[in-house]
Image (spheres, rainbow, N blue to C red):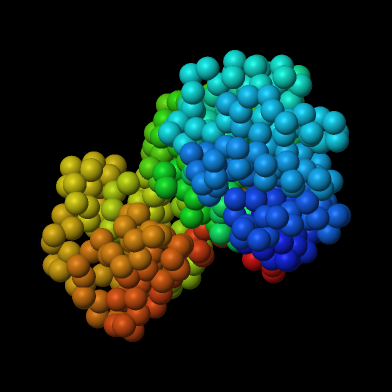
Length: 480
């Protein structure tokens, strides 16, 4: 089930949330602690006002809620609300058997026995979940992963506690994959929001249902994703999931925040992933884990696409193609003969190789000169430090920004102090925000602009073909 956590402070506003999200949800959670005091007294009437099963929750402050009542007062409020036809009631792990539990069992209300950890994942998480389920309840663990290893630990709960009825929630940015792939974690449901997240890392009900189709994931669903750090700003899930849906391909594509590439490959094996995209800063770090690489990856030295082959992973690079497409006519016509490339990371490797492969004279500018020198020697081009950017003003046809500087949320930063003359073509491979400070400065001077979204879409279409074997559908393109 996709369960909507209601955030309204009145029953009427909670009903409005359900109505607005009814097409996306299977259940709702009424948070008594978020309601006004007079509304709490009427909560027993709420389940009869809606056609979805409702979970009754009165969350204490220490568990991430707003309830400041004494335990006796909290129990009385829950007892009163249980006069209504709630389908579930959430009772915390440390609450001993009491009249709330007794009343719930007498009425046939299923008990969710929960514990919350906002600091991390407890070492005994498996045994704690098992002990909760032994009481005949649905065990709920809402914990906070901080690494990709933590995320792998949470996914493994499905295997370790296969027959235990449970709900596994990963809070925060690291936990988003387990909220989306809740079925792979063996969870009975995942909690969603209607707008602003009620709990850290919540995904909107609309995205879970329409973008990810999370409730349709099954054993035959192909799992794809994108790894990076940062990565949650990415538009790649929109591109690929819309494409999957358009061709009726049973697959899902989601973002993975990663800190350790080796552990991610272990997670990819556990989830039986079929492929994934690679973004900053792992385009070269993934190479040592690949059993096969394409000619482009070998020459560029960076990989942005990984696909599963029999017995191994294969690395490919679609960045060079995606980068070239918007400026190919300018290169072929002779409009672009020289270029300044800002940055010497994994993304710039593809950019420099693509330009040199087309005969463009390239100078690489980077804060760390040694890295620029290494990349320049491989591609037979020039290099310099970012501090000398002004030397090249008015002397190049194309300026390409390949670093992560200016990426969301750091909108007002440019990696280069450069005065455009207006004759240059300015190209920033960052796609969120669309107009970076780098491009704004170029626009003021009258330069022709190219955006990261162009590169993203062109390289994404090629990735889609590598993942699925199908051309990217035109109907999905029209809806992006």
